[in-house]
Picture 1 (cartoon, rainbow, N blue to C red):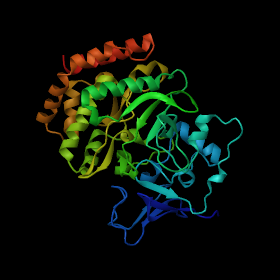
Picture 2 (picture 1 turned 45 degrees about the horizontal axis):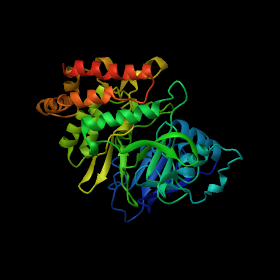
Picture 3 (picture 1 turned 90 degrees about the vertical axis):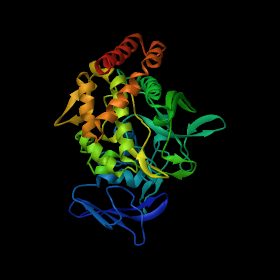
Picture 4 (picture 1 turned 90 degrees about the horizontal axis):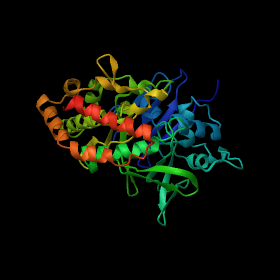
Length: 395
């Protein structure tokens, strides 16, 4: 039997406990004596030892990447693609949020780069860091007015996201446009700061996203709803879709201002329907550390996925209404008001949100008439998406 592995868990770069494998295939996270602050809503410090029966506890499993980055990091570090623990031991010293996992016996020297390794790949495995999510992305920093890949250690306040392979080659431009529309609908403070630009040494234009889980040199606690409720990712990473809006509403019980955040979740959902952001699953809603406690984080990972339906992209919304996920076309005023009840938002408050958004029609349509940075076919489809949704909800 192979030796069981363990890692030192840090919170804001301070040791707080140990994450270890168990002989039956599960794992255990144990807080160190004297720790008084929970590292996760799903791992309260009031219970010093947390056992999970199968694989990693979901809080830790969701720190690991999916998709492109998982493929690069496991290949260059010779880690099994399905080994979440191995990925975190190799790259988890600096994750999204304030938690890290350090392997006392690990050396980054095991990451081998061959001559001719693409610059994007090299940046993805440069340090003991990882980022959750599917899309091609690397951590970056600013240096002398330019954006450069982050060093193996030190600050990494930016995430550079790159487009997917054809036929989804314009996802970066799509996200940039969709974020702009969401700022019109929600306000600047409610949407992640981002813009298109180059990264030195890497080909192509990236969407440069400023991380909201970093403030100066400080790491802020941040966890998505899948982590908050302890939802396992599943081998196919579909767990993030297997939940309803009631679950999202229940997760808001951890907010320091539950009703205000429920109102903002509902307003954000209205905006997502308008812009066709169908992929708003559990991992795309997060609570972020603030001076007053955990609050809803700015919106992130937002794009019009509906227009990629013909390319095989799902056109069903990320969370379930009742027992199933519903097609984007089904989202109208009546359904949204039903979802507001599931979120625990009073109907009067939900109707107030709808009135607020309805007043923004002219600036939204003006932005739609400007360049959307997409080809002619996708531009037409994007504009048709917003106008169709606006009619269903408001007209």
